[in-house]
Image 1 (cartoon, rainbow, N blue to C red):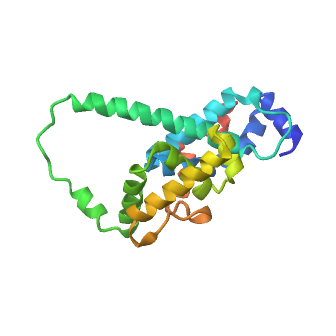
Image 2: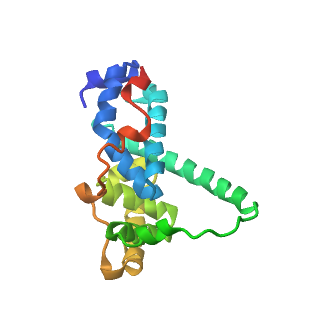
Image 3: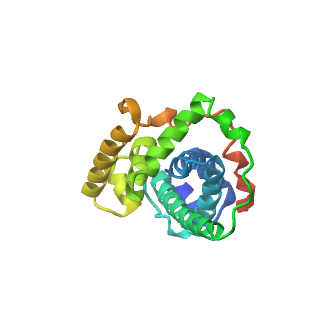
Length: 208
């Protein structure tokens, strides 16, 4: 990334910040979806990540390469915070008496969709992993970061990333039939909602 663009972002120039939103919003969305297994939550991850990035823009180093690792690091923390909030919410709901059961036909319909079934299978397998294992899968497999960059994002040694990834892959092979591991790269999210990130409720104009 050109130093001038970094300087413009540090100075709070909305147009410059809009450029990194356009370039990295999809990567942040994909990571958010893989860590939450929820489209709506992933959109919230995008919004909160770029709002936090805007707040922390003065911390950007004047020189350096891509800002993607920095943004993905923020996104990982956002996902952690959302997970904690969700657990507190679920705990509160568990103390409320359940209403009478009502048949849910949407669940039956969703079960007929192959993509949805595969998504649930992978999501179930990921839920069985430790959070630290899910994070390295999301960063190294789906976001295609190298070990060193993922280690920087997570704030751990490279060897820790390697061991977590190896352990996570072994567990996934046992949990997902057919020894299938979730695909990386351009296949990481397949969905017909091309404007999902834009519908996260934020636009670059909001950072003006």
